[in-house]
Image (cartoon, rainbow, N blue to C red; front, side):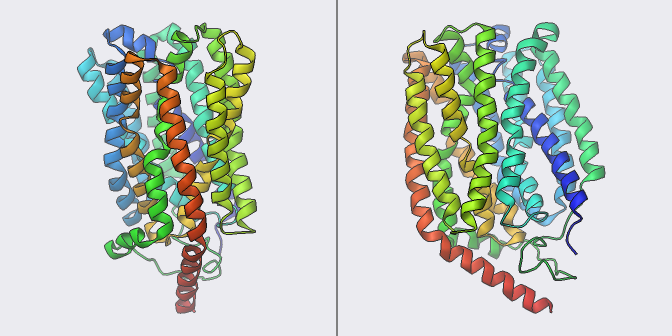
Length: 426
């Protein structure tokens, strides 16, 4: 029996809320960068170390979360992640000086690495032909969370200060931990796969190290893992430094920043769902569909970002439109990459597979904010954003194209393995 439609949409709603509010907390530091720097009297390089600290901790924790998710109940572990989010954010809000803020903010990276279990859980509620749009829907929470964080950072911080804002978001994490624990159920692993959907008593396949090591023998995953090292560089640089860039190099007032970022973030939210939907559409016609979409998207996003950041300062309207167009294409690969990983991976190691991907991404991107800060000190934030973003996106496009050639064989292998399991259950 398939998971009841009503409950699986309740699960989507709860997990969307988790991602939305968690992203508010995670990305809120972007619009709060300037007041935090003023509070502690630090420069861009020191603030870059704050960003990088959380990314390093998150990178280290990805393999830990991935293995835990594949061995134990994912829903309960997600509740624990929400509890950790609330607790570490509270600590960040009350520390008195820069060294302690650097340490407590780094500790927030523990729960930042908790998403592999969320995506794995959803893969057992929705089949491969519609996962892309579901992941795209969930991932719209990230730009919307950024948008909500921007409003909190600009307006609420003027009332309660940046510390008060962190207390509010930390409290939301504590509340959501209870909601997830009580509402989200644990479906059988692999139940949504077409080959296994009609099996009444599905055998529980457990995480095994041999199966996990086999992930590195899949050509699709090897190429995606390498791509992932470069893929998050642009995201981290733009996420953490775009507000500072608009403030100091384009001389935008708070209201102008808000309008520009609202338009860009809404375009980004559309890109997630559109990318997942188009990826699903093309995937039903060719196993290369998701990767074709991703290749085109990163090339267009890089081109539009170059155009946007080189526009004259006076062209605020054209800058906003071009930046929004770049923002639309930036997230299109995201839901397609998660779906692609699960298109070639056995259910019992999916959290581990996505955790490896995120670990490599985080390891590659952990130094990006710091590198950007160092470049900005000697040159400018515009130079830092452009050099880092365009070079790594071009590398990603090359790896996406190569992956498109090899993925059909890996998909066929997974479908065969699942058919063999279904036959054994009859």
